[in-house]
Length: 215
View 1 (cartoon, helix red, strand yellow):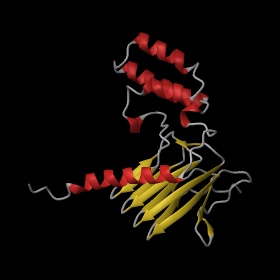
View 2 (cartoon, helix red, strand yellow):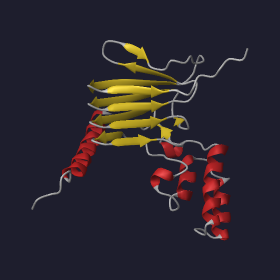
View 3 (spheres, rainbow, N blue to C red):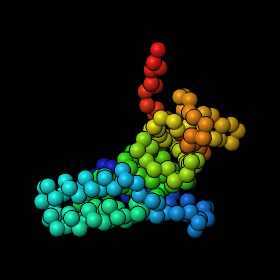
View 4 (cartoon, rainbow, N blue to C red):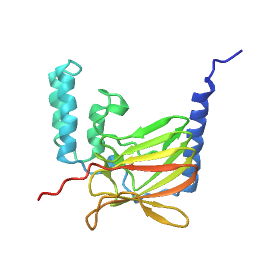
């Protein structure tokens, strides 16, 4: 049976992502002392994000007034991000959730993969891009540590990082360390350390516009 052109690509992407996850799991020991994203404490801003989704769901008839009141009661008593995330799981697709707690590796094989919005960046994150591009938007993210390590494997692929103000990004290879952000940061500011293993790979950092100084 003749397959249509390009029909093999989704299968190749799936195999590549599965192999990347298995390789990463095998080489990295578990850290039982590191809290999982769902165990992190929720902020008032996180509660308001979830409350807004619930109110919108009631306004268009997806949940009743009784359900809204019940869920809002849980929202304002929630202590962790996991408590909040469960409340909207049945209301929006995964990529539209007000909180994203997926700490799995980010892999792009012959495609573009991105992670953004209000998501938890684990202390160590593995990124793989082979003939594709991975985009990480940190502007509204929750950093699990003051120093985040990104292990990037790039084979004819790219890693693009969008950063907020006062976050430093450095790239570490075998023989040198290069600062990728241009704008100055305050002492003690968060640092993202990108450790790259690449073959014809590229790392780009997108910074917010520089503020003009008042005269």
